[in-house]
Image (cartoon, rainbow, N blue to C red):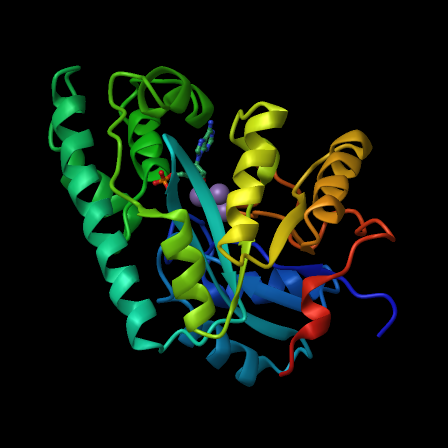
Length: 281
Ligand code: AMP
Ligand code: MN
Ligand code: MN
Ligand code: MN
């Protein structure tokens, strides 16, 4: 296929997205998406439902098994996508379980911190917002808005939940090499998500990508949601320099945010090698 609309990064309500896998599929179909990966944070729980919906609806969308792993590299929290994985792989599921335990632990500690600023029962309330066990900071941000502590989600991160803020709790995520390894063992490709969103200097970012390449990571998310041409040419340049494959994704969480819709990204630059071209389905 010469022209494809591909979205290899989005979230469902199995992590911190607002929509069910079924609704995501409907949206993707409306946007004429040809290939869609569901990449929930540290969980693959939505993938069975997504496959079932794809079978029921017969929309002609190729569904890719994905995950977005929270990863530690030096002192930085980095997101690594696992794409085209066998999500039943035992070692992979063990790592996912460890990540989920870390999330639960962190959530309890965030709740404790929020109590000191007058938000009671934050853990139970955030779990209720999440609607499942896969709890994240976005659920706490939603809670802070709901309780009138802050005006919007962005502000919730800026004032309370972001790194260094009063309700921030460092998390024991797996390290970069371990994440790449477990994704590879599960037959997938590891991709650094949204490389420009970590606030790293150019030197540090190159160092990160070098370490990722050394660990045998496969790709870089050259386009993540809304990026301008200068940003895209920067990530495409890094991709070429480190001889990585290129990925693209909306990082869609919900309708009505700063994110573009599913599949709404620009096309990958011509010099990029699309990661999906090596996949068999
Ligand atoms: P977690 O994986 O639980 O640490 O939460 C990270 C998630 O929170 C990201 O994937 C985004 O969905 C959301 N997030 C992080 N920073 C912000 C921000 N400044 N504004 C809005 N959402 C954010
Ligand atoms: Mn998220
Ligand atoms: Mn991310
Ligand atoms: Mn994401």
